[in-house]
Amino acid sequence: MSIRDRLKGLTLRDEKVLRLVGGHLGRLASGDLARRCRDGLEHSAETWAERKRGLTAEASSRWAGSITSNTHDQWGLSRRAQWRHLQSLDAGIRTIRHRLSLPIGQKGTRSEPGGYRCEREWFHKTRRLAILETDYEHVSAQRDAGQVSVVRGGRRLLNQRHNLAAANRTEAAWRAEWEAARWFLTADGESGKRYGNETVRVTLDGEVSIKLPGRVLDTQRPASHPLGRAAGWGRDRRGHQRRPPGRVAAGRAR
Image (cartoon, rainbow, N blue to C red; front, side, top):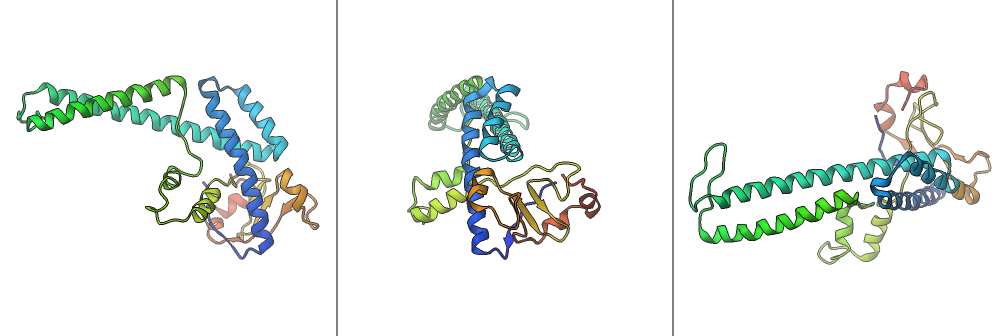
């Protein structure tokens, strides 16, 4: 079970610190994802632990665990999407090859498509087949090499940057949304911890508190919170209602 919601009632200082945290962790997450992609099929428990140790020095062990876990999920999702794309290409290739092998104008059946309607369509489908076969070879080679295509921030925003006029966006507005989309502020739950975990907590009444990473903590340490926990940052108006109160109170919110 996960909670994702907007925080309300933030002060200017709250917004500043949250932007610093999200930006700092986002840069770490981007670097970790790039390194995971470079590892490809050579990834192992040892390389994962090495990445986590490097991130721990820049944030904390819990933030490092959340970042590497999220990176693993992103890479795995891209890998599965790549496999589905190969299956789609293969299905298209087999269908076109079958229809090209039939006489022009031959009718199909309920289970099998027929031939193409005219010579012009037949010719265009031969060109289409060549394109699909080239794409299949390219994607198959990437998969064998352990390469994936993944964008932190979303492919939609990435493509918008190539034609801001068509998207009716200014570069400054696009840049602000792009940077915000690449922030990282996610934590995994830990069984036995109060209100979720030691990194991000949501109380029964919806109050959110966040453990500051080391680099941000050096400049933004609240005087009343010597351990670096910025408490009372807004309210998660609906998230606390999604978790069974009994599990939260018993420290079983994950």
